[in-house]
Length: 414
Ligand code: PMP
Picture 1 (spheres, rainbow, N blue to C red):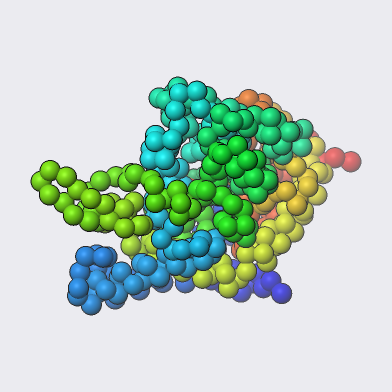
Picture 2 (picture 1 turned 30 degrees about the vertical axis):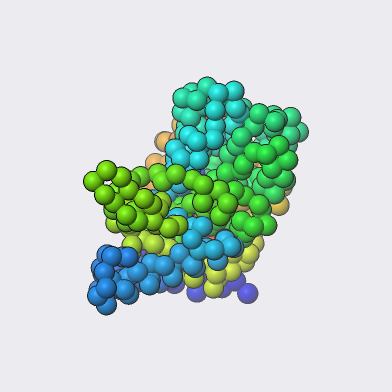
């Protein structure tokens, strides 16, 4: 049984009030809150083990290195990486994708080649490929959405050709919640000799992600959206590709031998981790994985689906509110973007904040999707996580309802 009160008790911030109302935190697609187990692991590291990794023979350095590498193992096994060395610590999803674009992309994408992306990509998985395509004379191909806000698979299959070198695709949209069928897309990419990069920023925190089963070549995700601190994230790469990739940055920690004239590179994964890393962040990401595993990612996903079902049902009663995204909850995570006739999302967000309800408003770093496909300047977005309750869903709807009255919009469908 999913014990929501036990989960909530682990998150200190959920006890606070905002504008004299209990905080209802529904901005999880921007960043998640942190349980005390993760906060304690940061504090424990700095209180007892703080030292630089991989450089010292003294006790603290050995302990810090062991904790740092143990965290890599935890995260690697969480996504079912064959080996922990296939997980590279980076700052976030954005850095992970840029790393691939600047190393593998620079070396393997050439004039006339094609990169396939979808129209629901976060800027992090669009702009690096636009830049690379422009630099190399490659072509960026866009796959749209069908009428139910799912990836248009027919178009995807027709866009993938023997010129395709990479399919870079989100696993779960941070605007629509749409889940994409990665395995099918990976097969299509591999059939023409292309690679697949998966933006898993929104999926690893909420779904069971198995890189071997999905057959992805690259997978990028951020710690801060899965209960870990900001400033730590991961790039997973298959062993075969990683062993051929050039380093991203040069300097300390990533070298084997250096003379005044030249240098050779350290083994994997150190070759990709130049400079002193975010040691406490990595260790805390290991603790976040422990927490997610002990709660159960499938149980979390099922909980979020029940919140979505409730929210979509209640939103249906609100005339003047348009919700974007499929109603097929098999293909959707806990994200709802919505627009209210005649009310700017920022104004709506402010009224909701006065009720203690935290949502995000704007283009959610997916400007082309919001502006050109949803045809609105911005949306309001509520996004759920393991600690949200059905009662909080009702608080959201009632805050939206009172905002509608405040802005003079009639609200209820009869
Ligand atoms: N892709 C998706 C789908 C996201 O939701 C996000 C974060 N909102 C990112 C990429 C970028 O993540 P970060 O800002 O941590 O690099």
